Length: 280
Length: 280
Image (cartoon, helix red, strand yellow):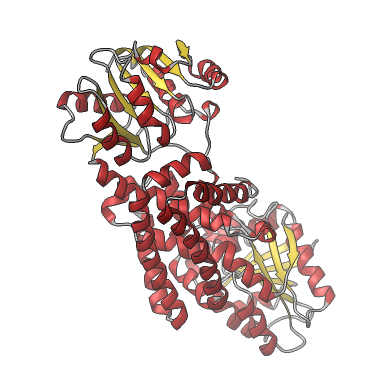
């Protein structure tokens, strides 16, 4: 893929990493950054070699063949709807939000039919944030879920797919609903559980929290404001995933209550087999 | 500390790492390894430069000023009790088990009074196992809990404390009961939760499990047999810790059910503060 102008709205970790990857791989002649925070924008400009920077989102979107919204999930739909007024004919918009139903189905109702939007979610990131943690190789070999709907034109889908592939990612298509149900289990619930483990640790026990506890709770170091948005968007599927987890925990509880060594061993053996299948 | 002979019983990751650290720091003139598995013993000999190797535990213990039992928690008490018959006058025994009440209180009743044993638990390790993953620096700056009882002689306590410090560790004293209650929360419960998350993941969702899920479930890759022993030893405190976690999860559930953004934000903010206090 080679486009003339790529616009990134929101120059945090993900937005800045997209800019770096696109620059390194020659995906666009010009890369524009837009962010309400001028200081962050200047940091990102220096770190990612952005060609032009705007605090007015419309000014960037107007020039771009593809615009990627890398803002908190709470803001994406409103920003895309507002940007639609500025979007050039043939311009395509996407996002990187961790939830898709609220954003994609909401925009389906709001966007004028001439505007093209396809939801995306790159499964890459970190509990860190900001352009200072951007990494040019962040998307290489990583999965990006794109979530077309019945209304998505095949050429829009292909264009977004090609865009992410040109950053080195593997692309998979899912409905917004399937995406949210899956991510509730693979990401949102683990975040909630990590937060419950970390939040429930009495301060006097901190010195006794070693590598295992730190690994298990690392994601709880993520930005609470971002994650509150995610959990609020995806409440239903997360509550269902929590229910499924409680049933797993009940199996452990029953085995421990009964002192049933064979049952514990079986549960741990199944868990290890599943975990080993993921790699490191 | 400088002793003539150190014996390591069980030459897995922890035992081999102790041998390497003791060798590198000149803690003992001779380091003996004992293991029922001759092949593992040979691997450890080559990797850690063990001076002599024995498949008969008594033959090693007989010669040692300090013997460290690095075997699964299920086996430690029986092995220490059996070794007591061979222990040289003045010999001191310790272990590295992740549970202390069952081992230490059990041995209090079984050991002849001339035999000296002090329980230890180094908070270091990995989901990996075997001498191939041994690391000479494993204990540097890491916490080792030692668990004296009313019957422990002050000079035994000092000797064990000095031993771990000589490997670079920081030593803290706790009762076996306090240790097990604390570790239930900082290690055993997180393991159980990681296993529940990993065990409950439908195989078709594996491609969507990214860094967050992998971090959160990494410990579930640990040896099921070892961990079954730990969970069985510490059933009561783990069930209490599980109860406390369920109460935390209920707070999230209530906030999600109610769509209470402020409550979710508060829970995540408290969790992040706790997590940040641990460092990386």
